[in-house]
Image (cartoon, rainbow, N blue to C red; front, side, top):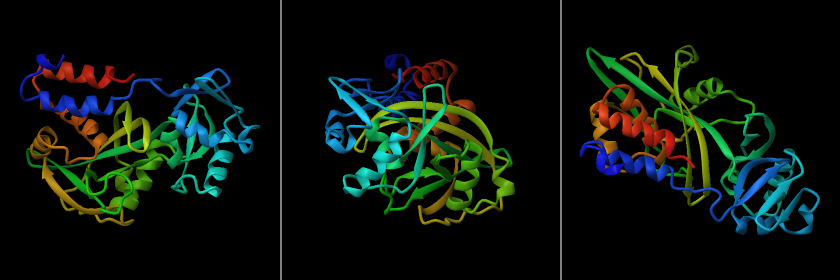
Length: 284
């Protein structure tokens, strides 16, 4: 496929393929609850769960691991935290079956180690000035644990336990950019994106709920929680060039921006078809 893309579109493919670089199960072991595969574990991580403290919670056999039920994740999170075997986020995410039913909670830091699917939200903060479209771009704090200093969306974050995508947008919009609730409530869900990616922290299997919010020209975002260092309002064609020519944005932000560029017809029709296919079909 890459050789069929135009010279303009070719650079965008690297962002897509980078986020789809995991092949499952690969060297990982499937993680079962009953007959459902809900994760993929690195055997090295499973060694932490092989002592007697966890014997009643799970069964580790050659090339697979089975948990008793979904409540086990919270028990394991707390036990490993007490042993100082990982650095917790102190934020719980829901664990779901492949059909989306919530069966338990787990500390966010353990999600890539278990290879569980996590859900999050990304919001394109757009401003229309006459006929030109602009995008608010955030720069992540240099103190962030993951991808410090990278460019990001005005609002983005993981979906904490018990929240819907819409509730998460409201929460993150207030915390990250001081967007009033009445304004963030106008955000429109436009797409969902899935990927499976090998990262230093483990396996990222993410489902991103993507939103657009058209902001007033006089709105100025203000960081409220310290996660963002600064904001800049950029013409959308400039953002297009930044994604095309650099790796300045956080890895998964590129996917959401490519989706935005596709919806706003930044690509030739032939390139659009190929890029949409890559976005939809590259996931394992």
